[in-house]
Image 1 (tube, one colour):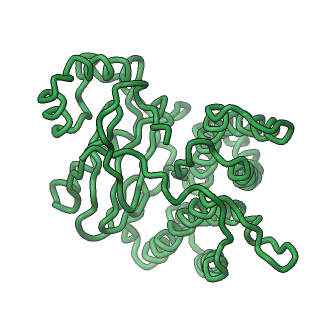
Image 2 (cartoon, rainbow, N blue to C red):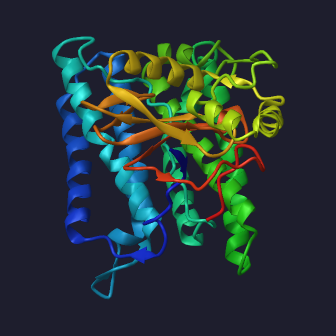
Image 3 (spheres, rainbow, N blue to C red):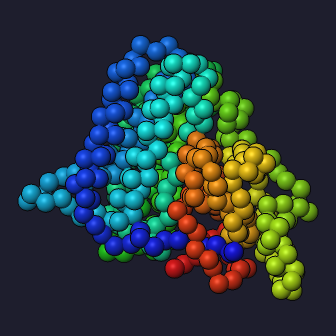
Length: 368
């Protein structure tokens, strides 16, 4: 089956149900409880797990500022994608708290993928709602204010925190770039959709940077998981002739049978031109190979844009990929961005079938 991005349920506006808001508050309280319970730990790993949980809770709370606010006795409606995004972040917190407690009971027993490598922003309907973009601005500001004082202290030990400091400068720059778009939105009725989408990507990079930094500052050894000190996540340039290296075998067969092989090769050549392979891509591929060999996932189809990569479904038990816990029955794939750095893991309850493959702009999301 050929899949495209399912954006249904992410458009429109909604009032967060009181039960959801109460549940979110309780998750926040559980983070505080775990932090107090484990406050005496000397384990950098436990502290880094708690830092990830605290960061996700902080940005989820910031995202729902309007929903938690009271206006004339009523909750303020927010964009549906804002609610869904907050829910996705809150859902990632309990497994982290459980991992921290397991680690406190028995070192190495947590099984947590640390560091948590990405905030995983949901895709928005065609053009990102302006208020959702403004809510993302609040989350980036919240997380930035949390890591900035600690980074300033880390500058006194530049050799120890070199990667974190450099990542902070990169994240801060992308943060400022996205903030400029939000300021422009406040002074004009409309902005091009591609500019707003670029701002969302920039916020995603900034938030991911701040999330990683929060963990690295608790456990500096984790910096080595992203590459040599002083460099961004390590990348390697794959052989230029290997255009089909991540293309699903099913896609290859169907492309050959349909007589579209040359057209597909041209699209793949354009896609891979100048593109390197990020560390996260390699880790994703390694984990997928292991889970396939264990029979815990199966290939369910492939993406309808180049490079026509496989999509997978979890068959049994939750699996952990790049720090993300994916429940049984959920589908996932690696979504390639415009650059290696903007690629990300995409998880969906289901992926919708597409009518055909696309050979247009490689790597671009379809316009619904």
